[in-house]
Image 1: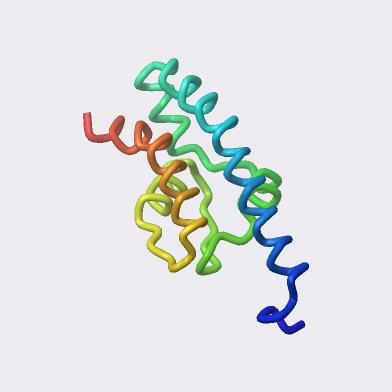
Image 2: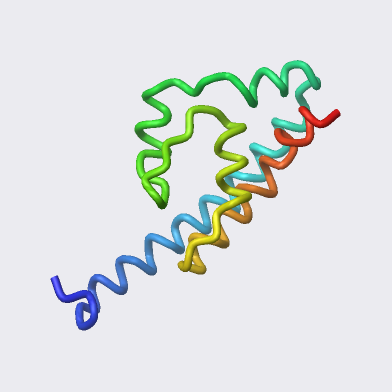
Length: 109
């Protein structure tokens, strides 16, 4: 496939990004509210508990760089450190990092 001249490919990529951005705008505030409602000890366990393989396989199957994360704590660290070239992906990881920041601060206290 010649992605330089393939308008359907470009349109599909843009739609995927818009869908992801919309999903983040709807889903991440709910996640943030939930995480902030947890006690410190429960939040600490939530951050470090290994995610079920089915969840990892379906929600986070191919992070940029072929990285696999096994806990929310690892996802928070990855999202914070992500510095790829794609601006759309950077924006999404910035949102994820902001929401999951509470997981990294719980261990500092």
